[in-house]
Image 1 (cartoon, rainbow, N blue to C red):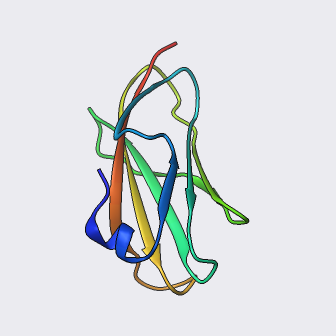
Image 2 (spheres, rainbow, N blue to C red):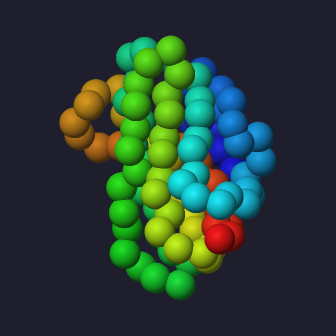
Length: 100
C-alpha cells in the first residue's frame, strides 16, 4: 500500500508487486528511486510494538532487506527524505507473513 507521496517522488516498486506477501526468510523490497532520495524502513511484528530497522542499499535500485526473525505477521513501513539525516516521511507499507 503505497501513499501518493511514493509516486509523486517518482518511485517505482519493482518487487514485491503486492502489498501483502508471504516469505520464507528475510523480506526484500526493491524499488527504483531518484538518486537524490534516501529511504529508511522499519519492521514490526503484528503482535508487538518494538520497531526494528531494515537494511537499505542504494544503487541502480534501492534494496530494503528486513530480517524477519520468526514465523508470523509483520508490518514493514517505508520512509523517504531528500537528505540523509532529518525527518523522514511515510511513503508506504508492505505486510509480510513469514512462514518457516
